[in-house]
Image 1 (cartoon, rainbow, N blue to C red):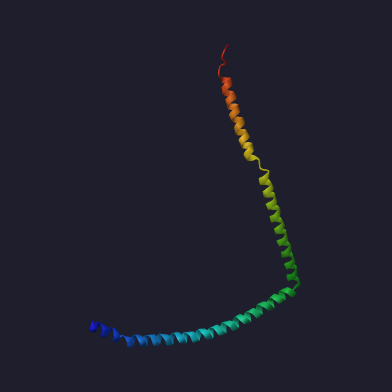
Image 2 (image 1 turned 90 degrees about the horizontal axis):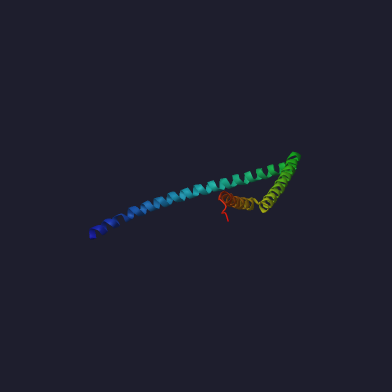
Length: 126
């Protein structure tokens, strides 16, 4: 038991040095990532400014404004088309009598079959 304990505690200094080395490595990596973060934030800010400038150019451009109006009209027409198609589908389903027609034809067929069977049977003479 004492030998096991001595061996286990002999490794404490080695583990401590490994932990400190890892900590230093992580701290240096943190510093480099923070520098990258700063650079990336600057790039994002620059790209946002460029994007806003392009958006303003599009807003000022007559052709772009015309296209925007045409796109708005197309969206309105698409909404109207969808509303009309939904209305037509709803009304079609409300006035769909195929199920009732099928049931009636089935009953008529059954009645016809019964009548045919009755006419084929000989009539009893009285």
